[in-house]
Structure formats: structure tokens, C-alpha cells
Length: 293
Image 1 (cartoon, rainbow, N blue to C red):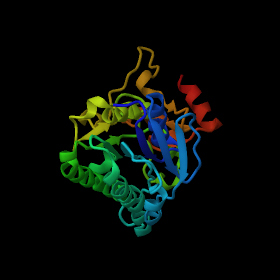
Image 2 (cartoon, rainbow, N blue to C red; image 1 turned 135 degrees about the horizontal axis):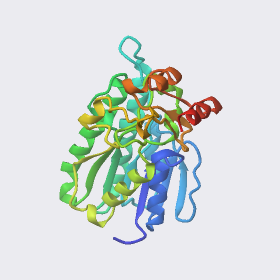
Image 3 (cartoon, one colour; image 1 turned 180 degrees about the horizontal axis):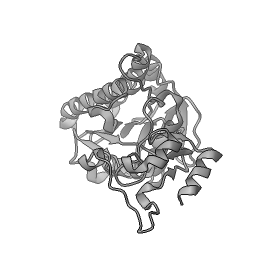
């Protein structure tokens, strides 16, 4: 693959989209970023204003671009609610950004995409179901259908299509009030997913050794999908009763969120943090954290 390959990446103003764009630039790609908020990622990067919530406008936005060797659809947002409180407008909004925008962009870019090109769609671990996230899960599950179908359609041209499905990732989305109904839980490995880890896997799939992988879904969740993660972890205590490492809450430096592990042995933490939920990483959260260390 030439070092001057061109990737179109959505959602480059923050989070996973920004991490993927930065990784591709480091690998020698030219990157065109599409987002509502302006992005500036240095040499090799160009930005176009694009509102993914208005997919009918996207074809004209990308019409003047040089052919794209890769399309990465990372833009997204999350609205959560349980049955009885679901908002049809939230479902429509997420479907538009996650699914309709991906469809319009692929439809506009793939005809001129060179054979051997790449498409990566950002799904979610919750696409298989998660309480309080039915609407979000449905839109991310739809990306699985798109991805597997496009993989079959484009295989004769050597164009691969894959889905990356992260678990709870250390991005600003964690602070979005629209997802307050489903507080963050620490995965089994004890830390939120690092956006750079997702970007590294995306870079592999977009690179020369991704040529034999298509129609697949890769879950990057820190162990959140494992059966062990569904059960409370055993308490870790010293002989003196001092809480062990697993009892310690964590402050995410990227998202500013204080995340407390769930479990019956975290009674003291739950009293402070509303049953193992997350709260903004303010002074009170850090004061509580200091009492655990």
C-alpha cells in the first residue's frame, strides 16, 4: 500500500474518530475529517464541515474529494432510557447519524474507491443488548447488517468491510447527560477502553494485512463481555481489612468521570457513588477517591 493513501473519517473532532485519524496520519495516510466541530490534526489532514444528522447533505460535501481508499464511520452519540421512558426522537436521531449517514457516505464514495479499499464502521459491544440501551443497541446492530452485506457485495473488488465494537471507552461521550440512565461500569480488566487501542486495531484492518479479513465484528471491551464480568468480583482485602486494588474507584483523565466498580463488597463505595455509578470528576469525587487510596 502506498503511504499516500486517502481515508475519509467521520467524527474527528474528539473520541475514537480523532484517535483513528491521528493514528492513520502517523502511519502516513492523508485524512479528510468530517465533523460539525472543526478539527486540526496537523500535516496530511484536511477538514470538511459535515452534519451527520443531515445525511441528505453528505453526498455533496464529499463530491469534490479525491477517491478515498478507506472510509471510517466513527461519528456517533448515545441516548439511553428504559422501557416506559423511551423517546422516538432519540431513536430517529441515532439511526440517522449511525446508519443513514454511513449508508449515504458509502454510497457516494465506494463507486470511485480503488479495488482493495477498506471500510470500517464503529459499532458497539451493546449491539447484542444492554438494559437501558435498546435504541442505541438497535442502531449499532443495524451497522452489523450493513457491514456484512457490503462485505459480500464488495468482495469481488477486494474491498473489505468490518465493524469495530468497543465497550466503555475513555472519551467525552461518558460525560454526555443524554446517557445518564446507564452509568459507566468498569470492565473486568479494571480500566476503560483506551481510544488508541481501538485506533490501533482500525489501523491494522485498514492496512496491508487486513486484506484477508472482511464481514467481521471485533469487540474491544476490556473483558466486559466475558461471563466473569457479569458476576460480582470477590472482595480483595488484607488481613487488616484494608480494601484491595479491586475496591478502588478510578478517575478517567480523558473523560473526567469517577467510575466505581460494582459489587456487594463495595458497600462503602456505593454509598458515596449511588450504587456503583459514575459522577463527574469534580473535587468531591476526588476527595472520595483519596479516602480509598
